[in-house]
Image (cartoon, rainbow, N blue to C red; front, side, top):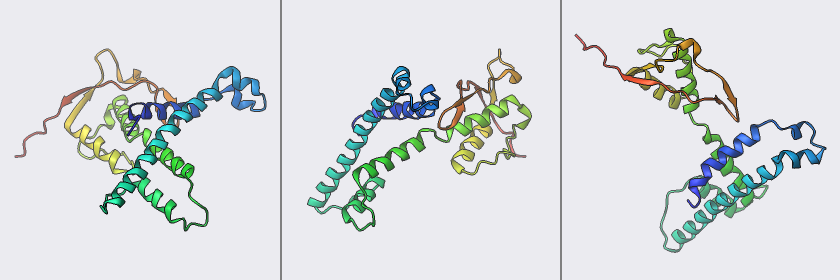
Length: 202
């Protein structure tokens, strides 16, 4: 994918910029504030950069689809291919435009920009701040609804003992939130993994 090295960082910048509070948001009728804060030009630049990359994604899929059709080869389809097929059929009550397809792709990428690592990092933080909650056998009390959070967390807890750096006491662990599209830790969690060897079964 052309531009992949800038796409994810740009998505993250757009998500952060969308979540940031600006004075211009409080007084939208005062256009001068949008100029002074630089919010509007910043969002416009980010949107244009992302739009160009997504346009390339759609064009690549159209080209690949046309090439596969010309040599009569069936290729595996992904979400973009499915959306393009729906657009080509044109049997919807409302037409599916290329802009609609690009919006769906953008939504999917933004939704995936904050992965399951965020709740795992928060769970690890909570357990390190309150060590008694660390339970290797069952990870009781962790009621995440998704396996892609539960499984990595259970594996991390089972295979390692986790310690904070020696100068940091659990009660002093910084739990400050960074408000974005999702609530992340403001500062990354730094911990020391110690391999855990379960006692031999007798």
